[in-house]
Length: 262
Ligand code: NAD
Image 1 (spheres, rainbow, N blue to C red):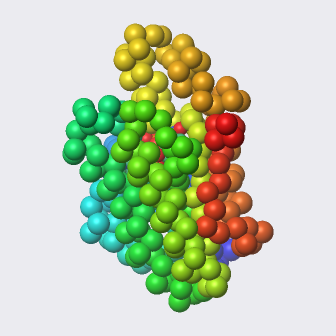
Image 2: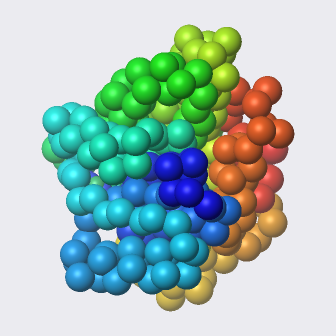
């Protein structure tokens, strides 16, 4: 296909975990992808190169720090310059921190709001004018089961993810007649480096081996009793990007093994 006819996607936080799975699935479906995230530049460049070689689409790499609004604006502008358009925006970059409210370091609270909620706002704000001009677009925000229900010791994350759902609804309503959809995907526990880190932290906190933490602490909330795989979340995102999903907007879609059915 002529590269200028391809759709293009910006997936934030796509050098690891769910974002990488989404970037891979979009690239495999023929979409040019801006891979983005922190980490070892040489490792990320190898990810970029191998994804491009495997799929034949154009894959670029960006390392903007989305905790800063000016960096988010630069990321969006560079992606539009690289591909001519952002047809699909996936706000996925995220971090976690676990502590009781009164022991929660204010700078960790701020970082979570900046990276999870504020960065989504800044990216949508910057990408929407192009989508509106083209009267087409797909915005998918990676929220969480923690966007729908709370858990102790995750106040910053739960607050930010609930905020993401509010942002999703408002944006969806503003652009509903313009062939632009905005939805939130709400996973339960997915097997990624972020969750592996939580298992290790909880193992230390509870003085338990990691397998018992997984079974007796984390998967207690998830009725299917297994971690969700990255590919399952990626397939849902690809579906939301297609024409068949044009009437789904403003939705918060759980993919949580029954967590929020309780
Ligand atoms: P991960 O730690 O594997 O990947 C996070 C990505 O975000 C990485 O690419 C990292 O470089 C990037 N990132 C983090 N801070 C950044 C910053 N300041 N600037 C630029 N990039 C930054 O995480 P994951 O588990 O794949 O989670 C991805 C998203 O899915 C997050 O929003 C997370 O909250 C959400 N989520 C994850 C789970 C889960 O169980 N893993 C469940 C529900 C929701």
